[in-house]
Structure formats: structure tokens, C-alpha cells
Length: 300
Ligand SMILES: [Mg+2]
Image (cartoon, rainbow, N blue to C red; front, top):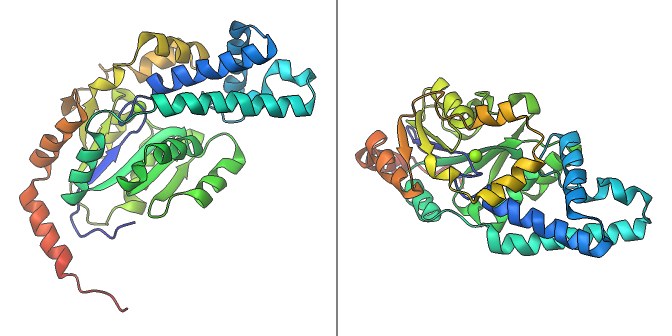
């Protein structure tokens, strides 16, 4: 991680449906995986959906990595066949991912500009750390993030593996189930571990007002609603919705944008630059840079 100067402003950003469209990525990838498994085994796709839903529900995670292995119909199959199906299903998912996992327009350049202006950029996600890291790597986002704070996931080995395989320069921290957003804990930990003690203005951006911005306001940050995050295809939302173990009331809560008035609303990630400029002006950044350059180098 870069060592940041005093008064460095902080951007805390959600990832799914804020930096890229998770629903438009996961929907087609999941369907490709189901089609592959269905054509290899003759099991009806609807039945497979149902069995995946049961596994995700058991693990309280809509993208539990080992899901194929736990599908009901595979219990009666030979281990070699199970291994082959796990591999072919997962391969179908990955092939589709190459096509569908994309940053929203302008995300990379905007993050780069903000970092050049002295911002520390910290990603905070309720998704399992291993899956988040996988997406970060696929998108080469590690070059635009200073640190990542995410849910440890339901599989105990995942957190350790994530820490061992994190890209160089990207600092990681995980939190438990009980501390997921809208708890303020992930944000507080992000600041405590990855921001200078006397950091400047904090900006929080996310597509869920209830989950991302309410805790942002509670820590005194400028809150920015990524309204474009709901621009996914209805077909993909239907796939995810059908798999989700969340009850309709919970889904409604997460996407209820009426729970508070965000400080800023944007329809394009690049609009964040103006917001950053008005809340943490460049003149301050120049001052920061001078202070930064004035810090004498440590012992060699
Ligand atoms: Mg999100």
C-alpha cells in the first residue's frame, strides 16, 4: 500500500453494481453453467436452479464457490463424474465471465485521476472476499485500489486463501456476517487500518442507499448514490432474484432509496470527479502533495 500524506481524502467505494454490473455479469454466467450441466446430465434446468438455490441458501451466499459439488442430484453419482461436472460447469461460468464482467464506463480513469489527486481508494463489499478478489483480478482493478475490505465468506478456508493470494500492493481485511453493511464496522475498519490517522474528507459511494450510504452518513462521510447501478437487464435480475435466499422484504429494504436523501446522486461514475473536486478541492491536493514531498525519506 502507498504511504499517504496527512489530510489525504478517502474514497470508500462499494464494488458490485457500483464499479461494474454484478447482476449483468452473474445472470448470464449462472445460466451458462446451468445449461452446461443440464446438457451433460439431462437434468432439467429448472430443477438445477432449484438445487442451486438450496445450496446458496444453506451457505447464505448467492455465489458460494463450491455449489456444484453440493447439488442434490450429484449425491448418487461417482466421484470421478462429480469432478468432471464440477470442472465443466465451472469452465462454462468462466467462459461467460470473460464476456460479461466489465467495468462501467470511465471507472478506471476516474479512479486513477482521484488517486493522482491524492485520494486513498478503499473498496468495501458484502460479497465473499474470494469472489470479490477474483473479480478485482479479472478486471485488473488492483491497480486502482489501495485496499479491500470484504465479507470473510461462509467457507472457512476462503479468508486464508484470499490473504495468501492477494495481489501485491493491495491490502485486505475481512469482516464476519454480523458486521456486514449497513453496519458501520466495515467503514470504520477501512479507515482505521488503511487511512492516515489525520485523513481528510471521506466520500462514500454505492448503489444501495440503505446498505452503502446510511452507514456512510453515520460515519460523517459525503454520501454519493450510484443510481446507474439499477440499470441491469430485467432477465438477469430475474435469474439472481430466483436464486436469492433473501426474503422479498429484505430485498425491498436493500433497494429502498427512500430511506435517506443522499448528498449527491450520479448517473455515471465519471461524475464523481466533480463531486470530489467540490468536497476535497485540488488546491488542497497540491498542498498535500507539497507536504508529502517534504517528508524526508526514511533510512535506506
Ligand atoms: Mg452494490
